[in-house]
Length: 601
Image 1 (cartoon, one colour):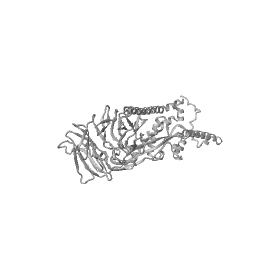
Image 2 (cartoon, one colour; image 1 turned 90 degrees about the vertical axis):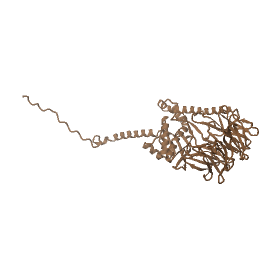
Image 3 (tube, helix red, strand yellow; image 1 turned 180 degrees about the vertical axis):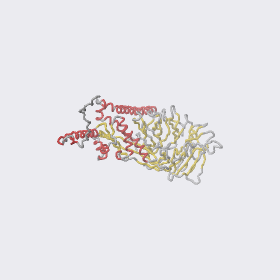
Image 4 (cartoon, one colour; image 1 turned 135 degrees about the vertical axis):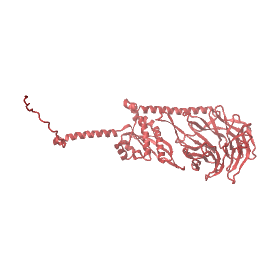
């Protein structure tokens, strides 16, 4: 039997020691202070490094401080939207826009005496500043409509030296809700702000030191910005060159006979003439290079109605030297008209598609909405001499045949209405302050012969007179009256095509043949001549008919569309539009420039 094994020296495992209750349990009190000193230094170093990274001046760090109903760090939603959009564009180009979310950033912003002090505290090299206080126009449509119009300077400041450059922010937006309109305005302001400062930012010595340096990481970081600015400059130069070159071609075609009054990239419509000048409707477009599309884009200005002197060339409405407009708004629907021998203009105003108005403005800038309608479409308003009445085409809905309506300019009340039963009117014009003439077919069931009718809208009861009847199969259109109301001119097509001049007393006519056809005739102030459009080699030209001799003289010979002629108030010149395709955006718009030509050499 095996003997038992003797016990060994092994001991049972000792229990685990409890954790020390304090640092003093493992380190004597005499040696504790060096530990705290090391930890304190480490924490201080980490804090200093974080603070330095936050506050060290960096030329690529930018604070966007655009006040739009407050600053973004004050809780303004429109300003935050604008700053986010602009900051995103700057970040895409390699810059470091100051962002919220970090408590230290918000503390610096909220505690600073002004945005520049906050930017310096945050180590920003630049600050983009603007105070946008949009004009709020509340339109009287059924659901309510808010239009916002902004026009404010924007500055780029280099904080180390305090040097600044300035640009301009202009824009507009509209919505049934004010906060929605503010959001739309904020979005449109962001790309404008970038376009206003980016060239100066990239050309600043502190940024150029980086782009001309040898730091590979920084060069790669700003590669997109350098490419963007290079492409932007090239595209803007290309656009300016294209407008200038096309304008030079068009002007050369006229062989020195025509004086151009609008700038090369204008979209101007001629409203009428008066002593010393003319009325014009503008729709200017600015060209910019878009970060999103990486190509040229259009920025549309608010449309205007202006009075311009005839003896000087105009500048774009966004130019600091532009004349103050009579009216500024979103959209003029169809052609306005000016008061004969007066200073007022009637126009149809479009409320962003929500409603149309008949509006009357004068040269002092006073305006009155005579009538507002959310459904009807008013077209081609014509203001009576003296300004008592306004006549318009009235379409009860989109696509409907136009009726004829006259409203009282003071009350907006309809005083005359002609419902054409799906027949087209051949035009209308005022003979004098109360008598309106128009071309129409009285009874399509019996025949389709056109009549020239006259109604005095000031008399009760109203009575339509039909003093002139065209020949069967003859078209009559585009009536216009002489200044004294004794003569009427119309375009006539049929067996005897040409220009018909009708005596408003005897209602006898004389037809003047015109090679190439005619449209939109207009009398000279003395009613001795008629200016009109006629077909030319490449488009339409402007010609003048002398009634005494029947001689027709072409004033223009260009390849563009010369149209809408008016005699100057002294009768010495004919003012008209010259239209041709935009060379930069040929599929998007046509240019329209106001020009004039002398009647006699």
